[in-house]
Amino acid sequence: MDTKMNRRIYILVSLLCLAVCSCDRQDDTYRQYIVPGGYNYPAKVQEVQTLSGYLKVELSWAVPLDPAVKLVRLYWDSGRDSLSLDYAAAENGRLSARVENLEDRSYTFSIVNFDESGNRSLPYEITVSPYGDGWLSTHAERRVVTAEMRGSDAVITMGTPIGEMTSTKFRYRNSAGNVVVLDETLNADETSIRLPDALKGKFFEYQSSYCPENGIDTVWTNNWVKSAVPISYNIDISKAVATVTANQTRSPYLPQLAIDGITDDDNHKWMSTNDPSYQKVFPKIFVIDTKETGDDVMTFSTFRFYQNPDDDNKSLRRIRTYEIYVSDDPLNPNAGDSYAAVFGTPLISSYLSQLDAVQEAVPSELVSGRYIAIVFKNSYDNTNGFLDLYEFEAYGYAAGKTD
Ligand SMILES: [Ca+2]
Image 1: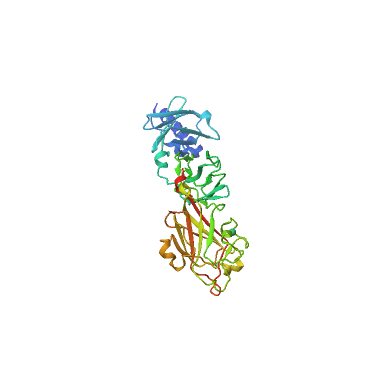
Image 2: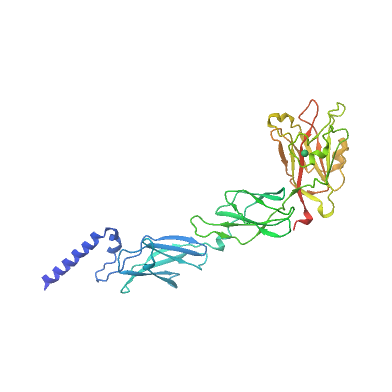
């Protein structure tokens, strides 16, 4: 009897050894399930991968080599929730499960295999964190750098996107007054987008989408953010009138040619006089009457000077020190040296370099007014005091008509 028992134990051990040795891949897997009681645990789940999504997670794992394992059950929230799956649904040797309607927090999942007899494997536990509105609310929106009309379109320039941002979409008023959502979106690696047929002077709205690294869902904020500033536009040059200090224009380069919409043509500029009696007289004061009244009076956000476009003739960019004034009251181009006493505080006091044909001046505060005066205090041309102004743009918006 003893001998027979010993032999049986010996055979069993041999078989076990064979089983273990012939299944190298599952060596670790099986060893722990074989217990002295003779109970065979089904294979434990292995090669688990997880992906996080918006209030959902995806888990996948390898189909066990043990053919006796047919079913698997996924538990979470300490077993309060679970999901059964059949390995018959596996593809390419893996079974995957998607768990939706989760909250914005961590979940520990426990995956248990079952064989045909209902024996349970040891659980495989893994923690996964879906992302949700709490995560979304930690993201800041992009900043609007500029929003300006270019012809009949608005060109919007946005700041560098913030982490995990994938794209930004835009909503704006078109020339017919209808609110439209632009089909095109601004990707995270882009900074500029065109809003076709936009209505000038109106605020626009935007919102962005976000996706964490390796996340499976891109999420939109669903919260339109109103632009900090409206879409600005140049003064209406069809009605604005430009004048300059008496005896300071060289015919035929009239001051109006500096607000005629042509920025780079030698025949479309204002040029100061070459009369020896006046050419070195400063200040030369260039005044624009925008002719805007009431609600149409503009608040200015950007001024732009256009000088000689030829980079081989930078010495012909002669404008040097200047000041810009904006006022509701007429500004007299013949105020002479007393201009400072009567024009008030300059909105901008600066200078141009000769390096660039086009240069901007952005006021540090928003000031509105019908009249603009540019006071030219000197010239890079010390010999003759000449100035050339190919074009001057004053961008802004009517503050009372932005909605
Ligand atoms: Ca011009």
